[in-house]
Length: 66
Image (cartoon, rainbow, N blue to C red; front, side, top):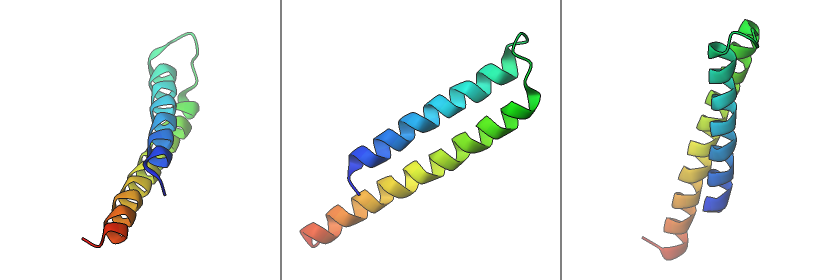
């Protein structure tokens, strides 16, 4: 995987995290169950971004032989 994949997944994590924070803090929206869904989604995308970043670094190390 390229580093761009990890960056794009991290951007999705930031969006999901921001939505979870908005749902938790803005009273007009009042969507308590949505906080858990968006928060869990943010965690999933954070893990995926970490895996993609790790795979990209490991792939570059194998390609250079170090």
